[in-house]
Length: 209
Image 1 (spheres, rainbow, N blue to C red):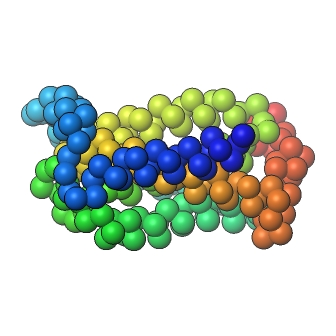
Image 2 (tube, helix red, strand yellow):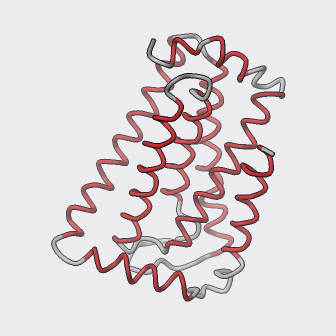
């Protein structure tokens, strides 16, 4: 069930979205949602939105590095490997997918837009952290606050006309599928060992008491 919900489901959704943008076209729902969100991007909102995205990117990088350092300090090296692989993997996928689809962004942003690398990275970080803390009391706090963050961040990059909503959805799908695949390896694969069991054993360390 977990495999279907976390891996197969996102890939099916990604395929459905990707099939509508392969020729560079903009599906009706995609254009309508872009125009709706763009109404929130009239001056002086773009400056504030740009600042929000920039600050969120910096904060995300700081939290990511901080998490790796904390896990390493606690000798949870398999968790370090898992989180690094989750984020590193999507960083590799991003240019490959963009080159394959070669979709132009809705605004003046440079490069290709599908799927959104920013949306992919934000979702990968949140999903990886959620897996690491899943056996602790902090899991729902991470899931709910993380979900709010990725949705707000995704809306912001659409408002700035860097991406279409379908770019964001595509990025989320890739990230969820990738982290889900890694989590299966983490539970069963020799490269990660029995990570889920180690999480249960270390629950007090991550859960804040």
